[in-house]
Image 1 (cartoon, rainbow, N blue to C red):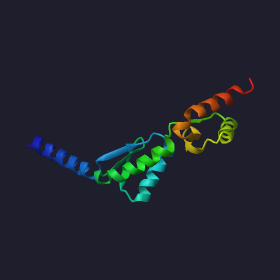
Image 2 (cartoon, helix red, strand yellow; image 1 turned 120 degrees about the vertical axis):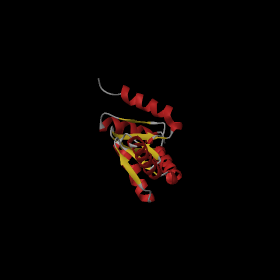
Image 3 (tube, one colour; image 1 turned 30 degrees about the horizontal axis):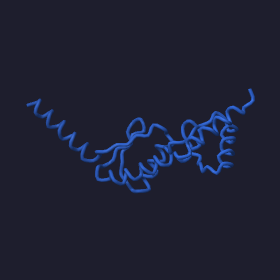
Image 4 (cartoon, rainbow, N blue to C red; image 1 turned 135 degrees about the vertical axis):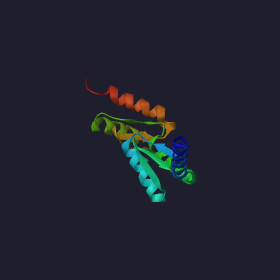
Length: 138
């Protein structure tokens, strides 16, 4: 009887837990995670925060969460970008990007302010970074 009661209790707990939160998203960077949570709050999506910056949400909100996730990813994961060890290095690259008409933005990450640009500008971005690096005094 104890075994059946334990199994029933586990099943009930499992059903209660699964029925409320059935999807999850995790961003390991605290700035991205905060932006994601802010967007969920703006959209009125109920969620539960777990350890390691994981968010649990209902399956009924999965489509809305997917749209938010796409917007977050488009902002932070453009396929082109880098963090720089100094403000001077970052400013040199920003100046060159502007000179060449390459649009960029600055996003705050745990690694510090990071320049991002469109993936199509990746090769130009890398060339600019390398040129700025090679022009540094030894």
